[in-house]
Structure formats: C-alpha cells, structure tokens
Image (cartoon, rainbow, N blue to C red; front, side, top):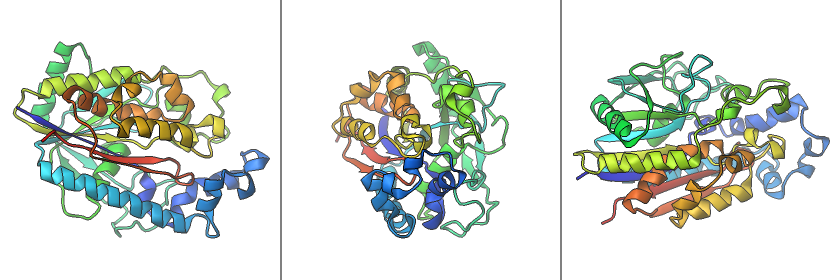
Length: 357
C-alpha cells in the first residue's frame, strides 16, 4: 500500500536575493507613481507594513522573514527525507511561461524523463542580476529527474476517475520548468544537500482570468482591469480539491510512496486590487491559515473562486489538490506556520502533513 506525505510552501523568488532586493516590488511601485496619494509615503500604510519598512526600507525585516521561512523549509525537508518518497508531485502555477495564448490547459502533468530548470530566468523585478544568496552563476541550469511511469499511471487512472488532464513530454514555449517548480526545488535544497527524488510537475492555471493581464506576475505598465475583457476562469477550489481526492484514491493501492507538494504563497499584493495591488489581504489569509492548521479542509473546498480572487489568493488552488488528498486519507498537519509579510508581496505558509502512525 502506498503512503502519502503532504507538504506546503511558497515559491517567492525574492528569497534567492539580497535583503535589500526583497522589497524591490514596493520600491518600484513608489517610483512609478501609480498609487493613490495616501499610499505614496509610509504614513498611509497599514501599521505592520510601516514596521516592516522601518528605517532601512525593509532590509532588516527581509533578513528575519527569510530566516523564518528557511527554518520552516528545514522542517519540510526533514519530513521529506524521513519519508523517502519514490516520487514528488509538485502542484504549481504557470505564469505565462510554458503556456501562453496558443494553449492554456486547466491543468497539465509533465511526463518527461527529465527536466531542466534555470533558477534565475525570471529574476526581473526580484533582484535583476544582483548576486544571489548562494553565489550561483546567473546562467545556472539544473537537471531534474522525472517519473514518467508514475505519471503515465496517474494520467490513465485520472481519466477513469472522470478527470481529463492535459499532459506533455516536453516543455512548450521555454525549455525550462516554470518558476513555481524551479523555485520550489531550489528552496527544498537551500542547504545544498543534493536532490535525488524524481519529480512530477503538475501545472495548474491558477491565474485564470488574470493570466494575460498579469503576464507572469508583473502587471503591464499602465494596464488596468477595466482595460480588457477577462480571460476564462481558473479551475475552482472544489474541482482542484476533488482532483486531489482522486489522486489519493489512485495512489493508495500503488507500490509508491509519494510526496504531494503544494507550491504557492497566500494572497499576492499585485493581485489584490482592493488594496491597489500594493499589499496582500492579511485577514483573509489568516482565515485560510486557521482552516488549514485545524484540518478543516472542507472549508477550502467550499470557497467560491470569486472569494479567492477578491483576496488575491489565486494561487491557493495549487494547495487544493494536496489538501484534498489529505482529506481523502484523513491526515492532519503536525506542523503549520504562517509567515506574515506586507513588503514581500505575499503572506506565506509552510506545512507538513505526514502519514498517520
């Protein structure tokens, strides 16, 4: 009988760069001058945001925030190594990377024998070509082993379960994995122990109606929501949750030990239009966190997609398959930590949901 391990983390790229660079998005918004007058100085910001900014434009807070996040990652990596998975399925979004105007699947499983990743490919706006924390060459390319046999088994069984996921043996539009997968792998190995686990990247169109407006996370200069028709929606939390339940049922009789990794921050500032795209929705994020930590997964399943999008929580559909699988097998978090940040684009959560003893 298979066993499943649930893990959750963020793929925020700023963690790869210096403390001073981690608030680059805030500095850019202030420089471009598109914010309401009340937000152009810290005096008009939420109190916690002012505290994070401090007297060094957030550099000291960035150091503490990174330390907290990497400490949580160490808990995740310890659980992963103790579990010794045969395969690691990562649920992540594609932000105008592999999928563009010619094809936008609701979800797609990559089935290659191996994949390449280029960690600093998307460094624009997140440190540019400034030195990264590992002193890697800027053109670093990694090769990650795939798990095509597991992927093929999963696709066939999902079709029997009533799901119709796309699949691909290669990466369209670019030869490297999208940043949700690349950054996840970089962070899980931030101590540079090495990575030998086969990976199945499972891409979800989390951005849905905001995909082309956001163009990969950097809103087009001068673009506003009312300037264009919205694109078709993302798959709903319920659909992604039920996808995870199906994956758990499919894998249960298999011979494989599989780690399911949800890769996403909670609300994103640039998607939270009610906050002028400047800071995330803390109250809504804390509600989602309380539900997750208590094991109230069904609350996530029942969320309307519009509720997530209003809060800038588009990427939480990446978490829904993992927690849907955990609901199916009856596993609850043993570690779940919330990491608040107004300056670093998003609030984060790190979680470990192990098999029952």
